[in-house]
Length: 97
View 1 (cartoon, rainbow, N blue to C red):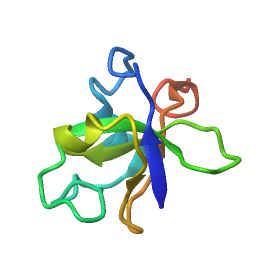
View 2 (view 1 turned 180 degrees about the vertical axis):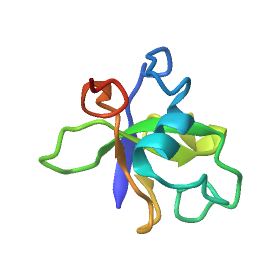
View 3 (view 1 turned 60 degrees about the vertical axis):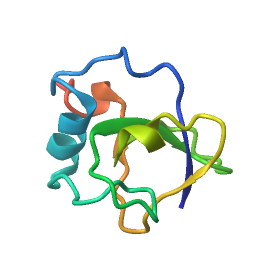
View 4 (view 1 turned 45 degrees about the vertical axis):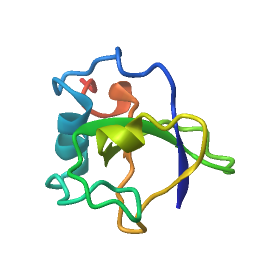
């Protein structure tokens, strides 16, 4: 699957403390061994905000990436087919009452 980073989302917060914790809590998964970029063997360090590339789905999602791939804003990233995209909409996830 191809995704693009959403710029400027690093300063937003949620009840999980950080976006990697959000991905774990709201997705029910453990942190993967490797960054979700398909060919990367680095440890995921951040919950990156992404949008599906070339899709009618304009939702924002969180996916575990290494810092290097999280910094890539200009081009599409191919993420693992096994990657679980967790909604970044806190109103529908960790902020739901």
